[in-house]
Image 1 (cartoon, rainbow, N blue to C red):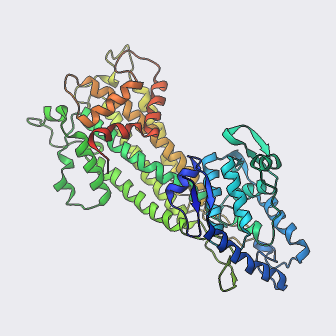
Image 2: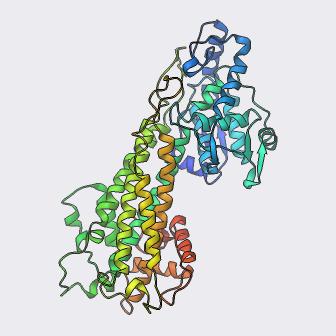
Image 3: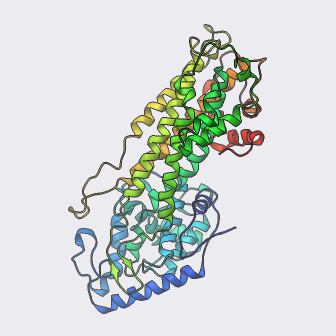
Length: 511
C-alpha cells in the first residue's frame, strides 16, 4: 500500500515504511488543494510590492534587504546553492528518504505557500529511488536542518549529486532527475526557503530511533532473562506484587516480560530452595528498573515525535487569513532534548547488560561456570575479549550520552544566536543505538553459552526458544574460534528482530 500524504501529517509507521521499506508515496487531493490555496496568497503578496520575508526580502541577517521581482527566482536559487554547504561523509539513505518525506508532509499541510509541483517532484524522486547525497556535517538544528535540506533541494534544481536506484552509483542532479522522469524545478517566490526551513532531518532520525529502540528494549529483557537464568539468579524479585509497590509503567512492562520469559525454568527451580544467597546483584535484580526507565523515556520521546509529525514547520508561514508570519517553530529544541534523553536511557541499559556479561565470565561470581565460559580454560580464553568489546562500546556510549542540546553556537551575524544542535543529538543517538545492539549481541552469545553449560538443567521454554535460534547460526561451547564472526551473527539476530520473534513464538507478544 502506498503512503498517502494529505494535509494532516503522517504516522511513524508511514515514515519507517518509506525510509526503509521504500514504499511508494502519493499526494492526496486535500494536500494539493491546501498547497494551492496557500500559494495563491504568496502570489498576491509577490505582486503587491510590499516587503515580505521569504517572498521579497533576503534571508537571516539579510532579511532587511528588498529584492525586486525580476531577481526573486535568482534569490531562491542562490539560497539553495549557498545553503548546500555540508561536509563529510554522506548520511544514510534511510535518513535522507525520511527527511524528504517529512518535508513533503510539511509542505502538504498548506502553510508554506509552495506550488503543489514542488512536493510532487520530491515524491517523484522518492518513488524512483533517487536519494540526494547529503553530507553529515552542516546542520545546527536551527533554523531547522538548513544545509541537509538544501542538498536535497539542489537535486530538485538539477544540480548537486544523488544516488540512483538500488544504490547504483552517484549521478549528477540533472541525470538523477532524468532517471526519475522529472524536469528541473525553477523555484519561485518563497519556495527555496520553504524547502530548507524544517526539522525534517532530526525528526526523521528520531522516528527511526524510536522504532529501533522499541525492538532493542524487548531484546534487553530477553538477554537479561537468559543471564539471570544462567547465573542461577532468582525471578522472585520480579514478582508482580513487588513491582506494584512502585507503579512506574516501564518497569512493570519489563518485569512482566521477565516473568514470562523465565516461567517454567528448570534452572531457576533447581536452586529455589536452600540457596544461601538472599538477593542477586543489581545488574540482575534491577534489570526491569533500568530497562523500564528506558521504556518510559521512549514513551516520552514518542509523544514528542507524534506532536512534531502533526506540525507544519516553516518560517515564515502562510496563514489562511493572508498573513505571512515569522515564527520560531523551526527551532529543534524539543527534538534535540528528546534525542539526548533517549541516548542517556539507552546508554544505561547497555551499561547494565555489560555488567551481566562480566559476571557470566568471572568464575568468582558466576556460580560454578568455567572461567570466561571456556571449557578448557587456560589453553582457551573463551569469551574474555568479547567482554572487552562490550566494555568499549559502553565507554563510547557514555561519551556520546553527553547532551548536545545544552550546547549552542551563534550564527548568521548573531541573528541566529541560539541553536538547538538537534541534528548532532540525533546523529549520535543513531550511534548509541547501533552500539546498544552490539552490547546485547555480546550478552546473547555469553548467556547462550552459559545456558548450554548448565546442562542437563534446562532453561525456560521462552529462553530455550531463543537459545535454539542462536544455535542455528552460532555453535555452542567448545575450543576457541573466531569470535568476531559469532558476534556479528549475534548482532544480526538482535538487529533483525529474530531474537524477539523466537521468544514471542513461545511466550506471546512481549510488552
